[in-house]
Image (cartoon, rainbow, N blue to C red):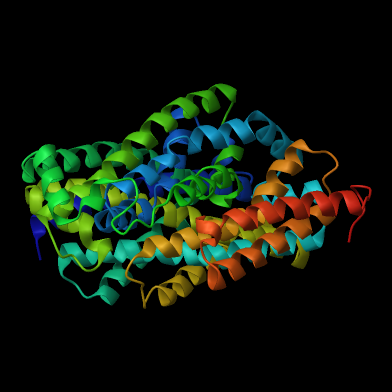
Length: 478
């Protein structure tokens, strides 16, 4: 084992655990377990809000899978990845104060809580909870695979052993600390990502003999690597522009992102987060994907793209610096895993159990169930991650698309269109999810666009049609 790399990474994990144990004191002392455990008491400031959105959104897909695809596709994938720059700005501007005010009025702790109060329908709640559980399992599996591959590359351990170490570490950390631990460590992780990606990009450029030399090597190998169209010309204008629906517009519907828009302290914190988040996410995304492209002349012939990031770090940096820098993708992975675990746990505990199975459950019962469900979910994801794909980015993006097709219009139009009702929400979720699965499975990239494009459009039509064709009083239940 390369202990000079492992020790700095291990020390970083110790810091993360220390924050988790500190946050567990708030969980124990809080008079409202659910609000503290799943929302951090709605006390996030601007910096923490920005960093927790960035660290959660900048997942293993961005920091392990993204550079892997950029390694294969070239600068075209860098251009495509930069469509994510305005994501944080877009989400907080669309949801903004209105979403925070409404969710506080409803005393909503989860996204499904908001949908429950807005549409007053058991079918909406159950459909939403099932969608979250199904698609977030895919997203969580992608993150666990990324964490395991990083540990595998660093230590030389077998993949299964690396996956076990990662799983145990994350489960202990999330179970003890809840959302406050997630948000605080996201801030630490976001800062590590910011400086870690900069250091690695500079070192990669130096190792490649400068940008001009790297560009010459890329052009000599394949001229398409330095064009906007990808190594094989597959990144067409239609695909790149429609990809922004997946990583930009549609992100408003992701439960792991919308929950952040429920948890900030005040309007000043939101405005500060918009500025900080936009700048930092653009900086990090550009750095990470450029690293993937620039690594190609230095380390040719890498077969598993997800190993590009750790391999280039250990190639171009002194071991102890590589250990610190590789804390960046580990930070991104951990922050996303803990957020997704809490989301799925809250869907099971709060949205299904407390709402419909045992509304009279005591705080002690809910606390025990939350810890237990989180642990069981972690074990199930561990089993799913035992047989990983070569590029986890596609698994993660599949989950993104499914969640967006399900939730974007019930969330956004539910907030801004008073005539939207439960029938529109049900139609939107069912049409969105089914059309996305069918198109992605049997007719991917229709008309050269990303598979999520038509499902998002069809779910919009279904929402409007369902709401207009079946007019009901909002308090009526189905």
